[in-house]
Length: 316
Image (cartoon, rainbow, N blue to C red; front, side, top):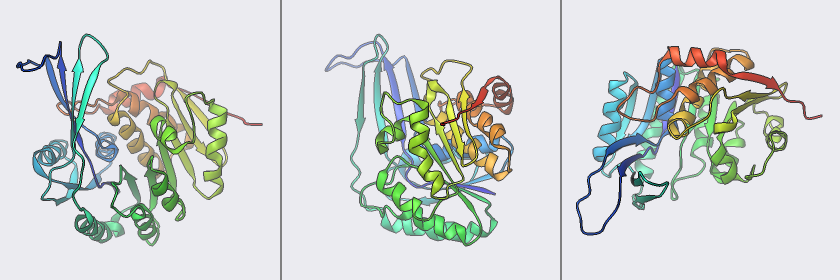
């Protein structure tokens, strides 16, 4: 079984409007609700690719109930800690006539420590059934940044392969002290961690990631949006080229979550590096972020897997 842990998911309401004017009722041409959690989307793609995931999370309020309804509709098994507070959410007002947007979000001041302890206890009860564990998502201030480290350590007691995806430097450093089986990064996370800037080359990026492999990490997956992706191991550095341009639909949390979920399947099924590298990028390209639509189909992923190109990079 593959378990995905989304400790602090959030949602984003997106209103597309023609204009904004104060003190007036404005109709929206389209309203969408997106889930901002890689592990929820990774559970979806795992299900699409015919594995049985189980998701652990903490939810509350209307947004939390909406996420739970979506999980149930997608037939994803879940074990939820219900909170007294609302699941974090944002509101984006997008002007149709330009790229201008307004983003509203609420600061979180709630103490989640009791719920995190309950989540850890639930996770421990299921570890005997698990082969691969996914840990991804933002850890709010005030929460122990060593939480991923502790879950990796628990997993190792049962020979579980853990994949960690984070853009928080302190969380990553603690996780690395327990040497997770694999790491995944998005383009934005590379910038947050200071691993790459806007002018990086692929070779320079690989050179900055190689030290993690030398620490004992088996694989590193990197989703680079329009540039494609990287899949690195100590024996081979693979660059996967996209057969299509990335648009605003595929450049989202769903696409990076789909990459992460396919990554977990490749490791769980012990696929060759090239095979699951192609599957990861194909899943990211196929993913749809709209909560009212399926993330994608297996047919979409299989078709795109045949179109993506892969080449080996030599740093010498």
